[in-house]
Length: 128
Length: 301
Image (cartoon, rainbow over all chains, first blue to last red; front, top):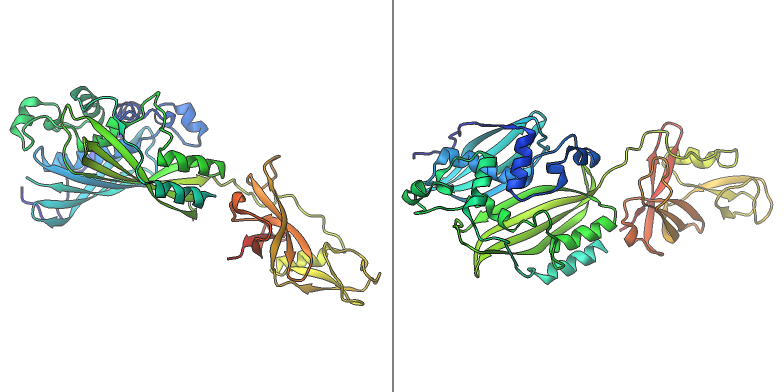
C-alpha cells in the first residue's frame, strides 16, 4: 500500500454498551469490579462501569490493522489515558500517519467520547 | 518511607518470572476478537492465516498482557513490584489509583502453543505531585514477557496513586474564638503576617497571647512579626475523628519559632510518615474566607 505522512485513517466508531464493557473486560481476564459491577463502580466514585486499559490497547490496534490489513505487523502501541469511557458512550477513533521510514510507519491515534479525549497514543506498524 | 521502599524495590530488579496459566490458544483469542470486534483473519481463520505474512495463526499482539493476567482468583506474588508500592502508598493515604500510560513493544507475534512467562521490575517512583485528581505518586513498572528465555513483548505501565481530595467548602472549618487579646493575631494572618505578642515594658515575647505579661505583669502589650521559620518541637497525626474541612489523616505540629515561642498549626504537604521532631518548617497562610486566614506549616527544604 502507498502511504504518506499526513494520510488519515478511516474513522472507527465503537458503541460502548454495557455489554461491550463487560465482555471486553472478561475477554482480557480483567475481573476488577469497576468494569462489570455498576454499583461497585458508583461506590468507588465513578459514574458507571468503564472500559479497561487492555481493551483500549486492543481497540487502538484494531483501528490501525483495520486500515493496514492482515499482513501488517504491529510493533508497538503506546497510549496515554485521558477521560474515562463509561458504558453507553460512543468512542470514535481517528488517526493520521505521523512518520514513515521505509515500511515502518507511526500512526497517531485519538479515541474521543462525549466528555473528551479518552485515549491518545501512537502505533508503530510495519506495512506489507 | 515511600522513597525508601521505592529505592529498595527498584534495586531488587526484575521479579521472578510467573507463568501464564495456559499456553497461547485459539479459544481465548476467539473470545477476545469477538468481544473487541476485531475481524483480522490472521487470528482465527487458519486458511487466511496460512496465506498471510505469518504463515499460520497468530495471537493479537495487544493480547500479550492477557495471557498472564491474574484472573478472578489470582493473587499477586510477594515479590510483585507494583504490589509492594501499592501497599506502602495505600498506608500513606494515597488509596486511589488510575493508570496513565501503557506502552507496549512487540518483538514478535505469539503463536498458539507458546508458553509465556512474565517478569516485572519497578523503574521509577515520582512524587508527591499535585495533579487534577489530587496529590499523588507516579509509579512506573516495566514488564517483560518471555517464551523460554526469548523476550517477546515489553510493557511500560505507569499509574498515579493519589489521595482523593476532600471538598473543603468555605466556612466549614472549625473557627477560632477571636477575643480582644487575640484579634491582632488574626488580623496578622489575614495580611500574611505571623504576629507574636510582646510586652512593651520588659520585652518578653509570648504565645498564645494573653491580657497581661506573664513575666512582669504589665498590660502594655504590642507584637512583633515573626520570621515564620522554625522546627517541629512535637506533633500528632490526627486519624480520628473526622474534622470539618480536613482530610484524614492530618498532622498538627507544635513548632518552635526562631523567636523562641511555640505555635500550633497544621503541617500541610508532608507525608505523615516523614514528619519528625526537628523537621525544619516555615509558615504559610491558608485563606478560608474574608474573615479568617489560618496559619499552616510547610516543610522547609
